[in-house]
Length: 510
Image (cartoon, rainbow, N blue to C red; front, side, top):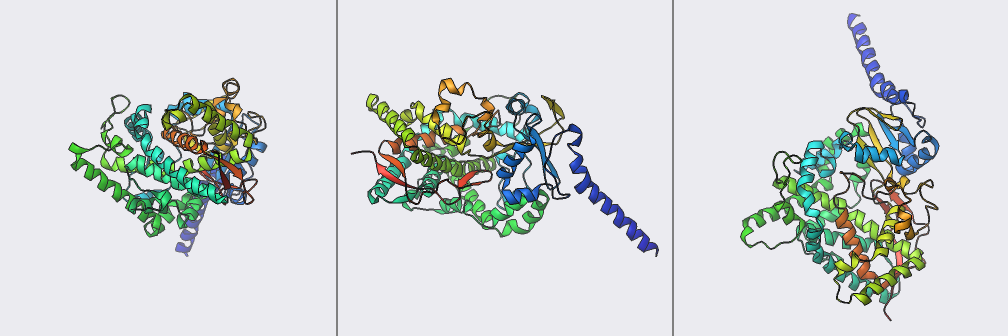
C-alpha cells in the first residue's frame, strides 16, 4: 500500500512538472507584455495552423490580424515561444543598432546536428555561436571583396557561355522548356567551379562524385519530411537525429562531399609550390584575419572549418540563385514591356562598350539591378530569419525578454501594402534612386540585414547579373501554354516553384 501511495505521489509530481513546463509556463512567457497571439493548443501551440496553412501563409494571416500593437505579436511552435516583428524601426534596432544583443540565430535542431556528426562536419556558419561566428566571419569576409570576386568571374563566364548554347537549342525547337531545372544545373556548375575549382559541365550531363553528392543533398527525400517535422516540433529533433541520421542518404552525401573537399585540400597543400588555383577553397586556405580585437584566437581556419564553410557556400548558394534566375525569367516573360526595356539597356551598353567584359557589363547596367531587386522583393530568396535575444530589452514600447526567439518575416515585409504600393505588381522602377528613398531599408532585405547578413550576397548577385546579361543579349522569355499563372510556390526557408517554371525561349537576334 505504501508503494502504491508513493507511486501515486511520484506520478502527480511528474504530471505537475510536465504540465508546468510544457503546458502552463511557455504560454505565460509573453502575457505580461501585452502582445496579441493567435489561439494556442496546450503542448502543441500553433502547430496545427502552421500544418494546415503552411508556415508563411499562417504568419501572413496572423500578421494582418494580430500585429496591431507596434507591428509585433507572439506565437508558439509546440512549447517554444516566438516573437514576430514587422515594424521596420524595431527591426533596425534588432538587426543593426542593438546587434550585440541579438547576434545569435535560432538554435540548430538536434536532427541536423546529428547528421553533421555522422558526416564528420563541424557546425556551419549559419548555426555558429556568437564568438565562433565573429572569428570565422572576420577571417572569411575579405574572401568576398570585389577584387577577389572579379578574379573568379571567369568560372561564371564559362558556364554562361554553355548556357547560351543550351538556350540556342531550346529556341530552335520553339517549344516551352522547364527553365528552373536548367538554372539549377547552371547554379550548381558555377558553385562547384567557383568554390572548389571543380570543372564539370553539369549543363551537358557530366558528373563526378562531388556533383552526385551535391545534387543528392538537394534531392527530395525522407530528410525533407523529418526536417519539416522537427521544425514544427523542435523537441522531436534529437529523437529523430539519433535514430535516423545514420540511415539517411543525406548523411552519406554530406560525408562524400566532405571527403572530396578534404582530399582536394590535402592535394593542394602538397602542391603548394605550384598552385595556380583561383577559387574560394584556395582563398579560404590562404585567408587570415588581421584585427586581433575582432578575431581573438587563431587567425586562420582549420581544414575542418574550411570544409564546413565550403559546404555552407554550396548549400546556401545553389537553390537561392537558381530560384532568383527562374523567378526573374518568369516575371520578365509575364511583363514583356519591362523585358524589352532591359534588353534595350543591355544593347545600349554594348553599343557604347563593344569590348567590355561580361563582368563589367553586368555591373554597369542600372536597370538590371532594379529588375533583380524587384524579383527578390516579390519572391524573397529566404522567407524568414531569426535572432535570439540575449538580455531583456524594450524597443519602441515592445519588451523582448531574454531567451526569446525573434522571427523576421522577410517575405511578408516585402509585400506589406503599408510600405509598397500595389505590392503584387512587378515594377522595377520602385528601385530607381528617387523612389528608393521613400522605402524603409528594413522593408527590403533579401539577404538579411546588419552584420550577420548573407556573406555570399555579392557572389549570388554577380552570378545572376552575369547570367541574365549574357542570355538577354540573344534571347527573350515568353509565356507558353503550359506556363503556370499564377505561379505556385513552395515557401520554407527558401522559396521555390512547386511545379517548375515553363517558358518559351525566343531569339533576339534576327
